[in-house]
Each structure stands twice: as structure tokens, then as C-alpha cells.
Image (tube, rainbow, N blue to C red):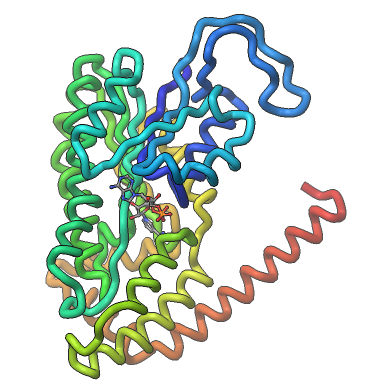
Length: 342
Ligand code: NAD
């Protein structure tokens, strides 16, 4: 049966791409119908007759005034298979009001996607900013689950999909607080999943590596505004020169698109037996496995130290080579498309 999916943080990035992907699903697995006949969503599709209403994809965002990009990308799906609703993950009242506005509060799949980033030397970040990040990335999920899980348990069915991060498994230099928030998310879900299973409710963590969204730009903007006089010159130099430069190279070489992550998330949602964890970028799997190969942590710390401080030139060269290969593969794809190959 078609599923009602509620997604948070849909004004941009992964949330937006996922909402559009599901609402325009050609197999109509997430279609909502407002009753009566509907004109075709895709060219060549037969118009459907009068049918009972089906639940839609509910794309939520903190500020519905920022729905322009989603509305434009959704096109004819808006108002038919996609509904936009207000939801601030930091406000219990707003979560409750959103759920109460859904018939029977029926949500089959909750996608907890809203999140914020933070990178830089610890001394340059205020405790208030760190607490606010935790409030969104961790307590935002907790608030949603507290509100949605009891209904799912009562119905003995449902799926909670959490957009975590590869940084929920492995910390990365200068991402101390962000990684901690995603570790918290992972620990929370890992503890909850067994109880949820008892009630036939699945929990899945989607763990992307770098994704090219506003997220990255926002982190760089913050980095520009930071007061580096609050740390020592060596740390400031490592962050502003080494880290930021390498981070940009990493995003350009290994970064996925939000549409890629939407496809991965769709696979998790539609799985007959949803996985508890799903990494979207195979390039990061060995990195995340290091700590399991050596429980003392020495292998992991040594590998990362060398990567950051000893072999950063090799890292940059490898990233450049990957970027070149990706660019070439893209050109081959475009050429093949022009020649009529699929
Ligand atoms: P993004 O900045 O484009 O999207 C995040 C969305 O969350 C924004 O639309 C923002 O408005 C929303 N949001 C922030 N606070 C909110 C609140 N209180 N209530 C409701 N919405 C709120 O970035 P993105 O890359 O699409 O990020 C989506 C998720 O993916 C985040 O959880 C992020 O941690 C995770 N992630 C991102 C990357 C990456 O490199 N971009 C990598 C791994 C995981």
C-alpha cells in the first residue's frame, strides 16, 4: 500500500531532493491523491479516475517562507502528491501541531533529516552554538521519535529513517562537536532499535560522506566569520590552511549529490527488511572500519594523524586524480547520451 512519509528539513539539500524523488515516484509508492480524478504527473501517463484519497509525501520545514526551491522542483506534484508543512525540530509544539494536522496522525515513514554543521577549533566556538547544534541534530531527532514512535508502536508498524553521517561512526579533525552530535544520534538509535523491532517498527541510519549542499557552504561561511584570535596561531593555521583547503578538495572529489542520497534513502525505505545502517559512499567504508580492526584505537589515530599531517600532499594529489577521473566519466556519459546510448 502507498506510504505516508514525513521528512524534516526540506527547504534545501537532501530533504528537498528526497521529498521531490518520493512525490514524483513513477511507481506511485508514496502518492497522495486529494480525491477525485487527477491529471497525469508524467508525460504519456493515463489520467486516473476518481479514487479514495491516499496519503501524500509531507515535506516539512522550519520556515515555510523558504519553500520556493522545493515548490519549483516538485512542479505538478505540489498539492497532489506533496504537501508542505511547518515543522521546527527544536520546538515540540510545532512537531505536535504538524502531526495533529495529519489524518489519524498516520505516518508510515519518518525521515529525520534536519541538521546543521559546525567545523573549526573548539576555542573559537561558543558553548551556546554547540548547544544549539546538539538541540537540532540530536534532541531534534529525540523530539520527533518521542512524538511518532508511540503511534507506530500502537499500529505495530512504521519506519524511522535517520540521516546520520559517516561522522556518526568516525570523528574527523575539527568536526568535534558535529561528530559528537551524530555519535549521539547513532547511540540513541542503536539502543532503541531492538525495542522498536518488538513492535514491528524499523529504524535505519543513512550515513553519507560529503554531500554537495548548502551545508558545506554554511560551514565555510561560519569559518570565515570565526575569531581565530581565540586560539593559538598554529591551530588557526592548521584549520584555515590545511583543513579548509583539504575539505574543499574532498567535497569536490568524493562529494555526492543530494539526489544520490535521495536514491540511497529510497532504497532503504523500500527494502523488505530495512538495514539498520546504510553507508552511501564506499570510499569511506575502510575509514570507518579502522576502529573495529584495532580496539585500542591506535590504528585509527595513527592513520588519521599521518593522513592530516604527513601525507596531506599525497592526499591532495589523490583527490585531484579522483576529480579528474570523475570529470572524464561525466564527459563520457554526456557523449554517450548525445549519441543516443542509455
Ligand atoms: P542543508 O543545510 O541543505 O539542509 C539541512 C536542512 O535542515 C535545511 O533545510 C535547514 O533549514 C534544516 N533545519 C535546520 N534546523 C532546523 C530546525 N530546527 N527545524 C527544521 N529544519 C531545520 O544540508 P544537507 O546536507 O541537506 O543536510 C541534511 C542532513 O544531512 C543533515 O542532518 C546533515 O547533518 C546530514 N549530512 C550532510 C552531509 C553533507 O556533507 N552535506 C553529510 C552527511 C550528513
